[in-house]
Amino acid sequence: MTDVIAEGAAWLQEVREQAAGVPATYWRGQTSAFGVMTRGRSSISLDSGLGIIQQVESVDWIGPEAMFADFGDPKPGDRVVVTDGSRTWTYEVLHIPNGSCWRWAGDNVARRVYTKLTKVE
Image 1 (cartoon, rainbow, N blue to C red):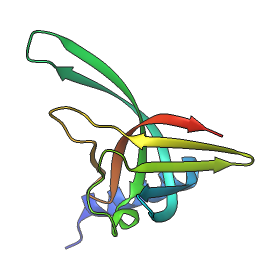
Image 2 (cartoon, rainbow, N blue to C red):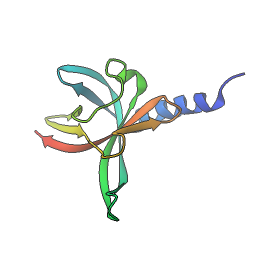
Image 3 (cartoon, rainbow, N blue to C red):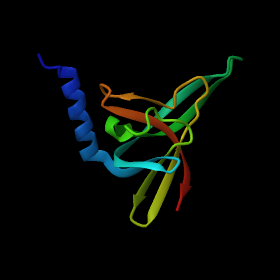
Image 4 (tube, one colour):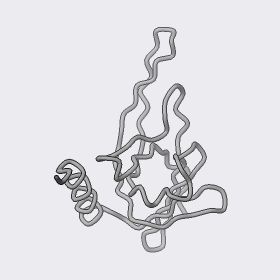
C-alpha cells in the first residue's frame, strides 16, 4: 500500500520549489550545498521564565532534506546565501533559546530553517 501522506508531502515540496523556489547556497564554515529553497516567515514566542513573553520574527528558508545531507541538523551560525542578479543576501541561522533553529516541513521531505538577514551586497 502506498503512503499517501508521504506522496502528498513530496508533491507539495516539488510544487513549492517550482512556484516560489529560488537558487540558494547553504553554508557551514567552508562547506556548502546548492539547491532550491523557498522563503517563508515565522513568529516564535519565547518565554523567559519570568513572566515575559518575547515575539521573534524569523525569515525561514525551506530546503529539501537532501540539501542537508552533508550537514545533519542546521545549527546557529550556518548561513543561507541567495543571489539575484547583482545583489546577494546572506541570512544566518538563528539561535533560539530553549528551542530548535529548524523544524520539519512536510513529511520529513524538507527542513524549515529559522534565520535573520545579516548582510546585503
